[in-house]
Length: 250
Image (cartoon, rainbow, N blue to C red; front, top):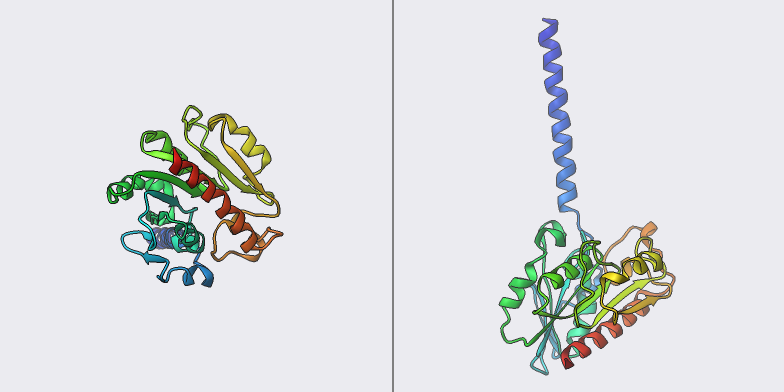
């Protein structure tokens, strides 16, 4: 009888443990940083930009026929709409802008999705890719695998993986990061300069932090910036538009 009781409690304990693990995995898989109201507002079409959300978040300028497209990979666990306010402003300058969605909101799970985007828009002559955080790392990897397709690269608050060397590519590249970053800082960026083209432009935003590269919800302790989100966005957009202009003129 005691053996049966012990076996029963062992089964109960294992079952509870497995349930707890399953709940934890579900919470991990479904956690997403939601867009702020300013990002949601940027999803509305107007006389300047048409916005669609299927199959990907797409911004199409209305007053011109875009020749250059910008594919942007979001950071990990961030809703793609959290970048809408930046992407809309970039599109207003005449660029097709597409922000794909990824399984579990993690770019490493579908790092080649840009291939689908490009195939779906044969009317575009030139493609530039970019990404934030882990999305930036995956954008570098895609560029390395597709050097004949990508004509420019924008790395936001990120850096290449140690095994991703694109230093021999003749394309414009920018690396933007904030002075209030924790992991992407002067040292970590400098340590990986050898992986990027010598002509890469590095932009350090004074007072900027990791999360103000988008407009999404964060915990108060994650807010490290000493400048406004609007100020940081203006500097990001300015640098990215300069990159797109250089890529378009090649």
